[in-house]
Image (cartoon, rainbow, N blue to C red; front, side):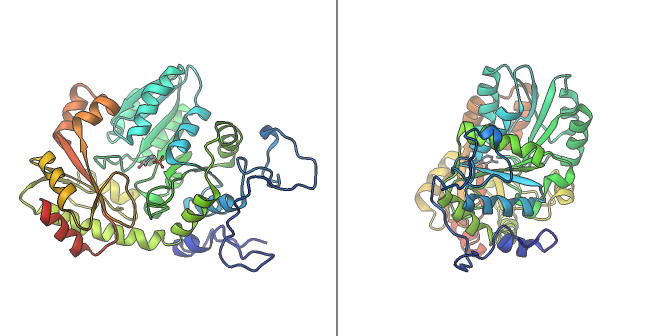
Length: 399
Ligand SMILES: *Cc1c(COP(=O)(O)O)cnc(C)c1O
């Protein structure tokens, strides 16, 4: 009998959920099962269409014992019925979009978000005859106004890349429900420590496990949590047939990283608040965006749906390019690199021209609004769990 950790505290869940001592060896730590195939002692259908929860392990592209432990832990933390893990956040994202949308369907999506998601929606989905309407979802009326008869899915990212705009999950869920559309939340920036979107009425929660959940910058992965009714087809069609399956080794690393997620998030948020305060007071910084700051225009909404403001800070300097040059040469602790959510601090200049031309393609008022916030470019700072004083000293060297 597996222990039920669903009622326990989140620190206990992060460590124990999905993990049981090995019944054969007594090993306390999860086994790393690198086998691609499994010896079976009964006739198993060769079609993934006949997969069920009771099916034994057959082939690792269908399911794997180590990966399954990670799925169970994620489901408990997200308070979800089920979870399926993929090779990357983008494999999870593409799988949800392709599995649940068909020709003639309409998708409403945040107009600034993870660039890979933005480009997949605008370029790939439209190629398959799916209509896509990007809106600034942080203004809830924009979502309601974009609904059409054929709207089948609303996809939001909150807090969003790179401006840390917040979208009201509960209000969006009400719109989705009325239209009988699915609400999908990319909750990578929030993590289940800050927000559990299913509680607010979302249907599916997507994570890039590469970021906070793995937390150490050494393994890529993605996950989708929700009702078994929605996760089952995702495993059967998307995981098995699109094939974006995670290596059990990476699943094992992420499982290990996740054990400290609650305490890491506490430190990420504490450090981020300290750095955001330092940046707000610095003469060469023009604007700072952090949901935990009172100056964030959506601080109240963030407080209502986030138990932790996470570690992502965005800021704008008067001369971004020379500042980025200095960062590349002079930072001693913070790495000038893309990605986020690692124990190590990372910073990167997100150039406006680049993002607008390639990913977001904003026009008119939406373009003005973006430029008004980001100027020529905005620094995305993923605040790590080093000593805040060392991070501040590092930033002082380059600002
Ligand atoms: C990184 C990221 C992704 C993509 O995840 P990968 O693991 O890099 O494929 C999707 N959404 C958000 C918000 C991300 O930060």
